[in-house]
Image (tube, rainbow, N blue to C red; front, side):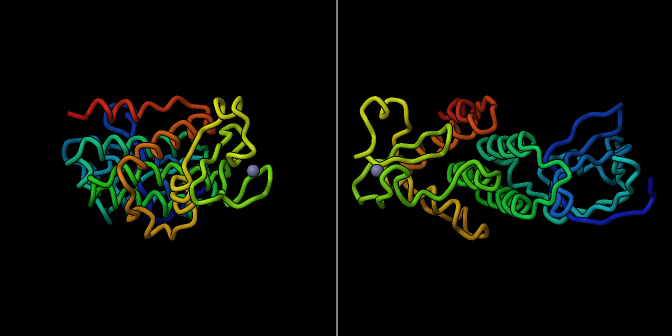
Length: 254
Ligand SMILES: [Zn+2]
């Protein structure tokens, strides 16, 4: 047990009710990973920390640690990501990202890349919510890479050849293998996920790009639709979760 205080930056991924006026905050930090902070009294009308009840706010925190628990002492806003609330699509994608992070069991692990990825994703989504499609697909694929569920696709896993310009590739979602057209039997083509080379190149970019530039990628709309669908199915298999974000997004369409 220790009453020493500890300061760090973090993003509020979610907040849940705990008793009447207290909240448990899920906070993603650079060095401590995803932690839970007990925030006493922040749901009181005049609490100076009321802003912590909003998700996706990026803050400086000071906490004390007691046993396995962190208790809030002080917090101040660095970036409120308020732009998110102006867009239903933006909010839907933000909730999706926070769910994937919570599904991913990073508890108490150092998670520098995940922290940076999440921070840029929320920031970009707040400032340009109209980019929600590319943010969704790129976040999914890069997160799965950080978790070790996928890889850069450079060549066929069966014949070792590099891909031809006009080729279609076939991904086995269960083991992340990719095979070229020549190596893929018609029986397999039904079972595997078919992607044109342009989609494979975009996926590779989502893994290899500098995180600061990742969400500026300009991708044509029909290709984005394919990438959103593919990365959703892939994430659902990898994380063993049902993911219904695409249904929620299509319900928002006029
Ligand atoms: Zn091949």
